[in-house]
Amino acid sequence: MNLNKYNFYKNSVYFLIANGIVALAGLIVVFVCGFNLDTSIQTGHLIFSSAMSIILSLVAILIYVGLRYDFAKAFSIVVSSVHNILLSLAIIAIIRVPVSESLVMGFILLIGLTTYFTLVMTEKLKDVNLKKADYNQIIKDALNSSIKTIVVVCSIVVAVLLLGLVISSSSMFDLVREFLVMMAVIIYSNLVLILPLWCFFSSKIKKIKRAKVDTSVENQKVVKAVTLPDGEKIGEATIDNQPEENSENTNN
Image (tube, rainbow, N blue to C red):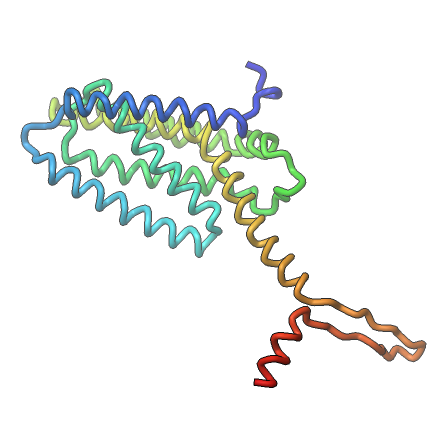
């Protein structure tokens, strides 16, 4: 495949559609066959603890990253994390990997790695002019600059998991397989989803900010000053477009 002609931003929509089909297949498997649950746990307790852990983690990340960096990154992390969790659950359901309480640990690891990779890949894009730049070229440049970090970190995590798969006991075997599924989903989302999501949210947020600025400018008319030879300025004034409301309030 020629990456010079490959449109990451446009094709991300097709990837999301394909992921939705996989998630739907996972839901069908769950409804028909149920999760392959470990007999030592209760389904309700697992679902409640997992949901609470995920929600609290995502809310904390949204607040921290939004205030510390920007909300485009925060929304990208939250959406990609939810996507990764749903896709991982769908694949786990389809391949019938036994689910245990340790799945919550896997979700936290998945959210943490998604946050890390999002911040790494978008760190060099904070000064990009999204109004003039090509989204597809932005994504290619970001991937080229961060691909080494992605490969190194993912290789280390996968190598540790594979080592654990070899030396672990039977009770840890299913946990390692769950983590391997999640790592595959994270690598996949790093390559095709995180940066398109960032471009989308950044462009939307910038449009909202630009609209607010344009509205405030439209509400004012500026009469430029005339500068005399001695440097004195005459005639500089700012006229509000809403004087009638002020005058009515004064008369009342």
